[in-house]
Image (cartoon, rainbow, N blue to C red; front, side, top):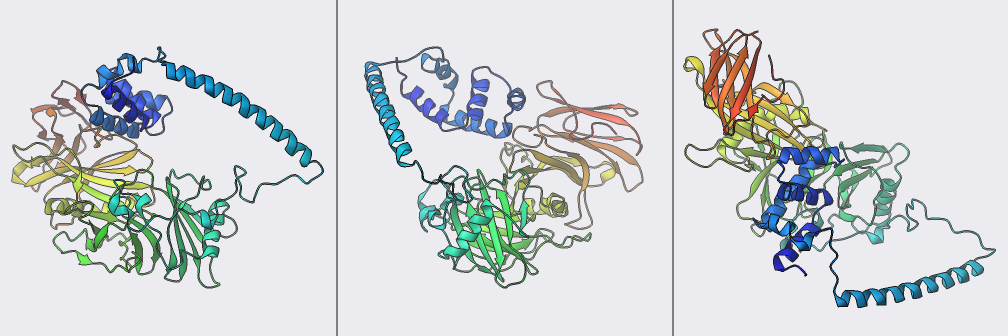
Length: 529
């Protein structure tokens, strides 16, 4: 029996995702495994991006609905049964006859070519060929129509048209392609972590070709990477090639690319759906954003780079607004961390009193978001050149400090990379002398799911000194925490999400939290002090 409409729809949804995503979906829906167990199984099986597989499984959950488990256990998806119909059998007979005819023709053709080719020189693959087909030429480059972005549901780099004054310069495009295929000589090559450096497997898409501040620049995209080729317009200097991952980019992470960097800052090529560009300083949350000039081909004027000295007195970011044809009132922040793609900054606020908790990161453009980022901005420089895609600042707890010292907020800043893993930094934002005073770092962890949708429970602690000179141990947990325990040289137990207890500065303690379901939770990073 063939499946009904629901089985067919689920089959189509499964076919549209990756093998790892299907595996995660079945492990969760049929075997009933928890996300952490599924992720561990996928990682043990050699899946390079288990978190991405779980995201795919979540999307399948949304499309399949609550009946997914019943559908997956139906005969339609039984791997031990073969479904045949009379039309299938007849079609197979015709295919067998056709296959024999094709094989006979291929053998005869081979014999004829072998005889005709005797005595002639053997053919050689074209330079740069990897499959015998040869390197894609400038005439093979994919060029997207200028208005495609407004009529597609896939708003990413595939919707970018080819722009710039040299999109028809055949020699420049040929040099860019051949350099990507075989970098040589004094060419400077840079790659973001986790970016493959192999030549393009097929004809890439042309995004830009033009002259920018004394350089000829070409931007190409092959579906998984963005490549920038540049060469000086004069005789002095050497060319450069930069490669960066851009797979699974979206309306924000595909909104801009760095087309050139110079002494005055970085110039960006903006996506065609960007209606407005402004710049603002993260360290000055109360200052208004200023307009950024954009040329007709989408290239901005130089946007000042952040100061990289110890003082950290400026952190310029781009504030872009999408066209209303894409989404209404959608503004977002991007910051330059030295790579082709700027980094998307987001914010997850504290749950309001009596309101449901915030589940997804929001754009970091309102007052509370800008205030939170003002205290975190100076730490962004530590992420330069590490392949970061987005950084989310999650305010997971708030606490009244002892001795009436004011109100503090606990924040987890998660830097997610293009290749999947993410690093987190937990900070305590206590009352400070200025709106941009750096927050105190209380914990760090690398390659962790903490503070993501797959690690929604967190607890942190720190030794804190009051104005009186007394030292306290502070601890706080996310919304599911119901109790915090302290053992070691200081012992304490507090119901709720926060704890404050007198403790010497150098006391060695162990903090743990209890969730509502009875699970124990250790602090992110170093569990002891």
